[in-house]
Length: 140
Image (cartoon, rainbow, N blue to C red; front, side):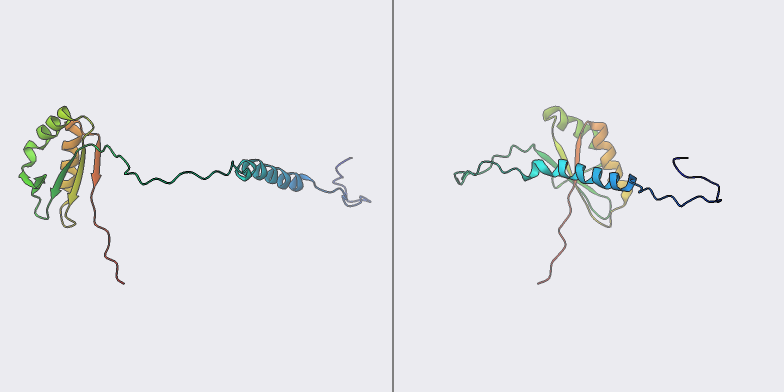
């Protein structure tokens, strides 16, 4: 037999080299080189001019909605009740369809109130809702 025999009578040990691991390693190296070769090509070295210009950012208007620890809601710093939120969101979307809502919720506020705000915004047609947080204080 070419691959050896199951009979132990006078059978010599198999002396063929197993090339499967060698082929596997070579294929992995080939893939690595194929992937990294385009990264090693250098582009034409040019020096771009340096200009000081203000980057123009056309950001859509955002509604700032705050929820305090007691569950009171504030639309752009003015008190608002939960019952009128959906209508106000719909009116705002009608005026500016890409409007965003930035929710600022107190960490002691109940999740239920925040979820109600999000659901009202969704029902009102708002597609983008963001949460505003504060950066942690750093000590130096």
